[in-house]
Length: 402
Ligand SMILES: C[S@@+](CC[C@H](N)C(=O)[O-])C[C@H]1O[C@@H](n2cnc3c(N)ncnc32)[C@H](O)[C@@H]1O
Image (cartoon, rainbow, N blue to C red):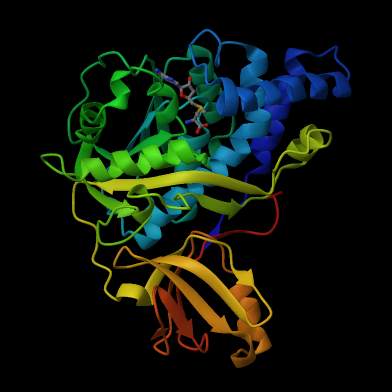
C-alpha cells in the first residue's frame, strides 16, 4: 500500500507563517529560534513532562516550531495508523452521508487533517466533518487557518473547533455519532498525574461517541512506559461492560503479549518517513532522528475484530529483520497472540527473496508460506518466501509531492 507523501503546500505554508511572524529576522536567526524551541519541546515530551495550557501551545514560537518540525512526523505517523484501520482491519467507512471524525487534543491538526487527506487519496468520496477539541485556542485557530488556506488537500470537508480542557466535563455530543475518534499523541499528556483521563471510565466515555461500526485510533509517543500504559489500558477496555474490542496492533481481539510478565520488548511501531527540506534545515545541527517515526498504536472498536485464522502462519513484525551469517530472522506476534522467532536459512534463499525479506519493516503484517515448520520453543523455520503474502506493508511514496 502506498501512502501519499507529505504535501509540499503544507511545508511552504508553515514556513511562511514563521517568516511572516518575524519578517525582519534573517533566515538563520529564525531557524535558530525554532531549533531552541524544538529542543525544548522534545525535552518536554521526554523529560520534564510538564503540560499546562499556559506553557504548551500558547506561544506563537511554540506553535510555529511544532508546525515546521513535528507536524510532518505526526502527520505521517497518523497516516500509518489510519491506513491500518482502513486497509487491514476493515474499518467500515460509511458509503453514504458524511463521515464524522472527532479529534481529541488535536493541536494544530496534524492528525485530523492527515486523516482527511489520506481518506481522499484512498478515494473516499463522502463529505467529511471533523470536530477538534484542544485546550490551546491558538493551536485550534492555526488548524482552522491551515484548513482554509490549503483547501485543495481536503475537498468537501469542514472543521469545527472547540476550546476545551478534556479533563473537565464536555458539552453534550450526540452519542454513537462518530465514525472515527482520534487521540493523536494526546492521551499521555491529558492523563498525566491524577487526571480523570487516566481512568478507564474516561476512555469508555470517549468510546460512547463511536458509531457501532466506528473505531478509536490511539497513537502515543514510543517510550516504553507510555506504550505499555496504552496496551494495558486497551486490554482492560476489552473487559469493560459493554466491552470494546481491540483490532490492532495484534489479531483476533488479543492483547499485547508484552504487558504480562517481564517482557524484554514493548509494542511500538518504527516506520520510515521522508523529512521535509525545512525539517532537514532545522535539524542540521541538532542531529535528531528524522527519517523514522516511532509510536505506540492501538485501534479499538465496538464491533469484534475481523477473525484472522492461521496461528503462527500470520504475523506482525515486532523487530527489525536481523541478518546473521547463516540466517535472516525476525520476531513476530502471530494471529494466536503469541510471540515467535521466524528464521530463514540464507543458503535456501535466492537473492531476490533475501532483498524482499530485508525490505520488511516492524509493523508489517505478512502471511508466511506453507513451508513454515515449528521448531523447538517459539522458533519457526521457513525455507522460501514463495507463497508469502504481504497483508499490510505500507510505504510512503518516494518523493515530497511537488
Ligand atoms: C503532542 S500534541 C499532539 C497534537 C495533535 N494531536 C498532533 O498529533 O499533532 C498534544 C495535544 O494535546 C493537547 N492537550 C494536552 N492536554 C490537554 C487537555 N487536558 N485538554 C485538552 N487538550 C490537551 C495539547 O494542547 C496538544 O495540542
